[in-house]
Length: 355
Image (cartoon, rainbow, N blue to C red; front, side, top):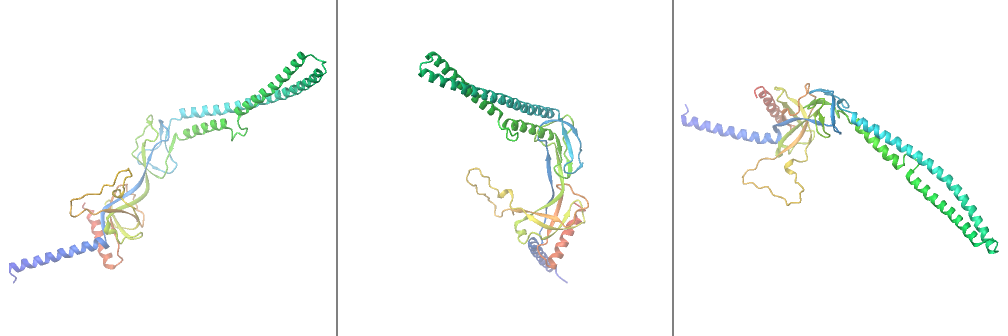
């Protein structure tokens, strides 16, 4: 029979050995078979807003509606935008008509120029003849001056017509409609009005589920203000591990995932990527000197890094974004590591029946 002192000493030795064994297990497990409950199911959420402002005329979806890329979600009252399209169309037609009128004016001015040039040549010939007659004193100086004035007036008319034609050609611009500045300005205005009219119909940018709908007919929707969200169907599982737990983790490392929504089930997965950094490692560029982190603690908190995990097989039921999960990594291919890691993650999955 053991004395009470011997029994107490034996329990002390057993407790110490158990503590040391568990301590060694957790140290080794944190390196080769790490596990984290800080895992979340993430899905891309696309805020939906209109590119133009206006009053909502129709809403074609409701909360939890399944939509495909290109499906019509809601529509703004197109009347003011259609009016702008009509006004721009009329302005473009008016610009083309103005160019036609300028073409007619240029043609008339060019005909007048030919007549003026012929008149100026005739007046020049007359002036030259009068000069010869004046040298022989067959005409008076007054007649010569009168002929000179007539010729100079004709030359001035030719110069004025040249300037008038040049001014009309500047107003007309390029004859090629694709290079004519006036027509291009009106065409751009029309295209912008047509674009804004098309933006009154807001469509889904990706497949997903409508969520947080805050819209009804008659509501004024401001451009850029989100009125609903479309949650993408593709899921991304993110898991946050301590830095030292990821020393042996690579892209393609096997993993297991347990979801709070599916207690008792373990899903095979693989590591797809790891984030390049976290917010704590981002330094703002503000022109100020760096501020070293100060701490009075002897033991600092472990930094956590994020990795991304993908399931080997898709889930039968899609989980909502934000669903919680637990991720187990298989950093070792050894049979003992596989056995204990499997036992560990299955235990967690069974505990989800309780909490």
